[in-house]
Length: 354
Image: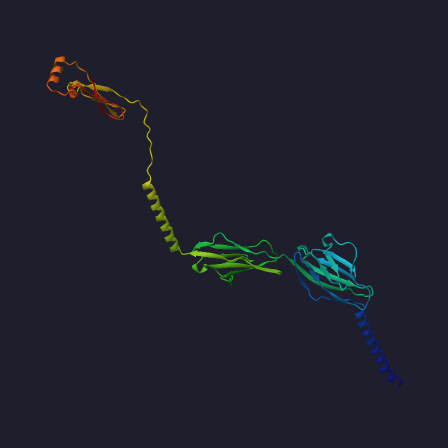
């Protein structure tokens, strides 16, 4: 009977020991470990701005925590290590005057750079605690996008002509994505509208009259979004182009014919200087012989009249009889003289001889 009573007592004792062991291990886990809470695991920052890597920790110890931040890239780089808010050691040159650590373990980065992009690991440990708390935050650093612009070889094309390419370009911006709009509506990547893998370049194949519209592109990254100024793509019908070309050709032809018909070359002929030829002859109009007739000669293409007159002696008796017969003295005594020159072939003048 005594042996039967002792068996339940032993079982109860073993159960109590196991219960106390489990309770003690539970309390030990709560007291000897640092628990870290990360409110936000992804932080987006802008070049030149700042980023707050916020964490919270809990511990039953009243000692100051030892906080260590590391940047995980190809290899781990220690950003800062501190006891509470007091930084231990010397910061790396790229982090000087840019780091601030708070009591709860939060890290503040000033004047962000593209090189700050990466995954940050935090470790918080307290001397009385056995286990160290760990957390992780991803920081992305991007550059704001400048206003994009569309580059193309031509803004006017012929219907059913070769392909036309529109390139969305911008000066600044990182981790960008692109979107195209036609007439203010998003443009999908379809058969005739082909886009590059990053959708930065739009190619329109076999341009149609329906493609005559306004086009624009939108560029977006995690910190900004910008839209380009719209451009107008003009599409001409083939028949219209032929009419324009034929009309222009006809007008040009008429202009050339008119100019050629109205234009005459100017030729200036220079005549050699020559001395004027003059010959004075006087004769009595009442008497001359046949060999006294003027003779024409050519001098360098100009007709000149040369005359030779012979004055004959008159019979005094005849002169007196003629005067007595009632003849006019002016008719008897007058003689005709003329001077020949190149400008005037023949000039006559009357001189009176007394």
